[in-house]
Length: 144
Image 1: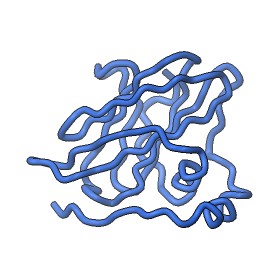
Image 2: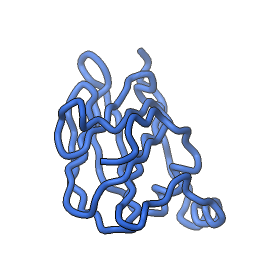
Image 3: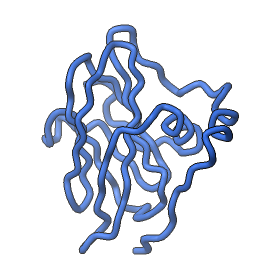
Image 4: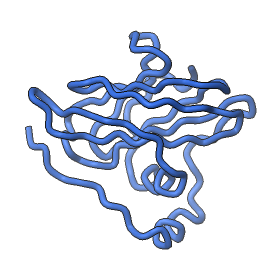
């Protein structure tokens, strides 16, 4: 398994210009928020990073990414934990309001057996840029 490659962002001005007329593939329903989980790096590209909401149980899995992919799903307003599973579990807390578009980035690093991961909320501009430039991963459920 090769763990090479990285994702670097262009300047904010370039990202604004490239996403100015870009429409996200899915916007939130009026009573929900939408979460985009992006994995812009090709590091550990063949390793699945499974995404869960609120707990780490199988029914809470929303989908998974591989390198250079994104997924999306809707959540009800309120506080949620988003988990990402690779060799390790990573998590981040989000607070969602109806109509919000939230972006979370998964980052891969070298693990002992396979790729490890970390996740964190990111700003809308790089989030939208990543969605525009990545391919859709595997979406299992679109609503939590």
